[in-house]
View (cartoon, rainbow, N blue to C red):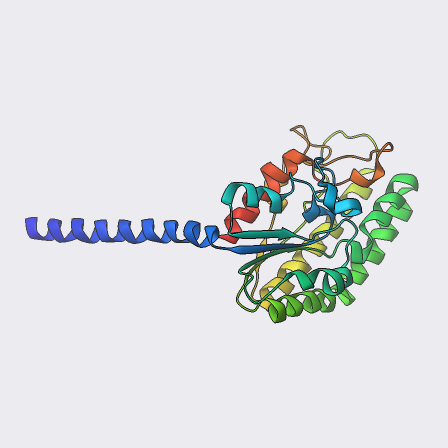
Length: 267
């Protein structure tokens, strides 16, 4: 019996050592990474303030999740070419050139502008419920028919430029908490907008899986911090003074929502 217990202790220690090594390995790998961030305004950090002067109208923020990863993890090399307003075509034609065969980690958030995020929210805010629902329905049709092929083009381009890289596809938060007392858009409009974002995320998740990439889903972590929630808001509501930041994550949304989800997915 004592011999059995000794063997068990040895096996347990070995297992624990294996777990410790498995946990430690990603940290050393992350420090050696050559990381490139691609994508749109959710990746560049619009709405999070502290924009770098070199980024100009792309509005890359030091509070965006790629920059936070660089600050905290300190990979061997880091470059963000994410840009406000970027579509999948913009990523393919203007951002993939930042990748090389030595790139080991890539993040990308893109797709919302391909289906008209900005114009949809403008319609929903300035016009009635019927127009809002119709605008989201039209966008959903684009998501189903066009977006999978466009995302595949981006993902295939990443593979071609950085064949050895780990690739993390980062999604979008759902904007509204439903079932609360909330002024502004009607309950039906808010529910339809959420439906459209969920379809966009689910479609992106499927495309990422088909490419063999990791999907970082931020939807659950934003629950309780959405518009119309009772907690700290991690998304900007409509801002008439600065329309660009509307419906984008705040600095807290990037640090408390996007960054931990991305860091976990990146390894």
